[in-house]
Length: 224
Image (cartoon, rainbow, N blue to C red; front, side):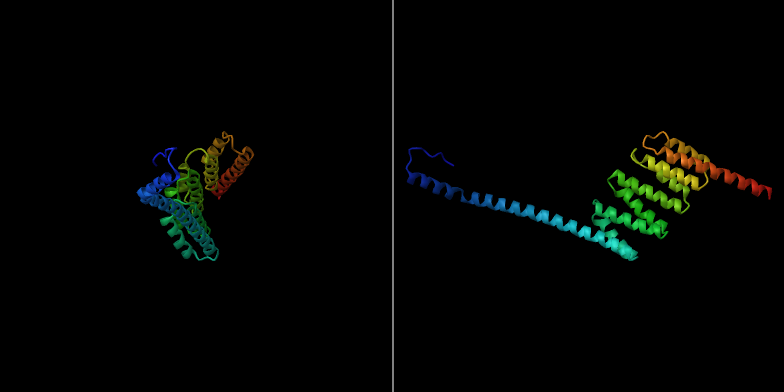
């Protein structure tokens, strides 16, 4: 705006203001409309984002209800939709874990493994990827796929879940009567500061008992 001389009269100043408005009214309208539009757009974006979150939360809840009512096919359709359209959200992760757990409880091992594989390949958070690996290994173990279970545990990333992965690996080897490998794995855990040494020693005692019984059983069969 032009500088208003101090010695101008009120009428002159008023005329200058009117002239300035006349010259710049379009710019003023654009600025005002732009400000209003920006506020509206921001509110619209926030509301749209909130609505989308509510929709995803509702779908995740629907998955839980469908699984509770044993409507697994319905749950799978919803989970697939979340995986395709909202794969970068925690909602798709929770829904996938729920569906995989249901498959596991029904001993549908391939279907459960498929869901865990999706998480391992799509999840950005290492902790969640490792959780999927630990659960996938349990599925393999329950299906008597020992090598696959061990390979899955060996693929755990970082150090945060090493204790859990080694303990599960040793337990799986023990259940498969691979006593030497199980013992070696249990003992390697004892060097971990976060390890529960009392628990590991109990496992080693159990291993000794199982190993002895297995030897006695073998000797008994040979005598027959």
